Length: 299
Image 1 (cartoon, helix red, strand yellow):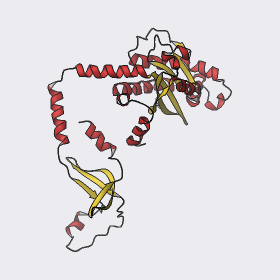
Image 2 (tube, rainbow, N blue to C red):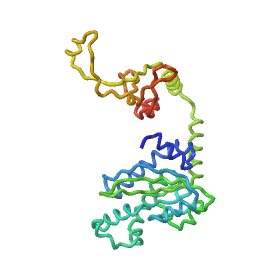
Image 3 (tube, helix red, strand yellow):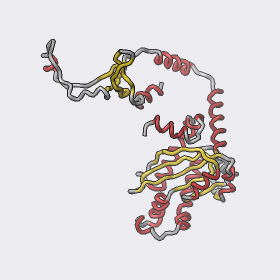
């Protein structure tokens, strides 16, 4: 999925832009989930956060109750309200703990699967809660509770941030959900921004800003490339005026847009050739390629 499409989907999921851009929250959370997967399922289990949405409490509760869900009390866990796993993740955990194959677990009840998963769920809570600096959880009793005792009580007037992580366990695709009270994450975001704004700007920060503005105003050359023809140096040396060079793969609807950089020319997008106001023109068909924009974002 392209980054542009992902942003459009997330924008429609009710997530405030400040939360989407709260990298100090998302990046450690991703790392903690992967650390937990390593401890729970082994070194081959790695996850990616592919679903993020904000929903009212009653909607969050109905979605969580369709999975194997664990809720945490508001006193020790004011931000992290619940974690849940789907059937594939619960079955893989049961197979590991019982040292059986997943094919032999068809008769295991959901209640027994939940009991088998409780230790892992608490371990995930401890990792995430410690990362959020909610409390010192090293010696704390796991605050497992009913959903009504979680922060906000999963009331319909409350809003919750649901983060879904998908991973492959064996030959099954599994998902882990982590649910936060949105108000808590928003407070964390505001505090992080205020902390940054209070820090004095150093000479290196000012130099970086100057360099960024200089790069932004630098002119570069863009070229539309119809086709590429490989030739040896010897063939190039024998080219003559009037000689015809066949371009069998030319497609005017598929023109490569290139930018000239210090590292040479790089492809940055796809165009099609046409006419605009009686002049030859190129129309961009795709977003600027992510590797190019990622390099710009690092400036």
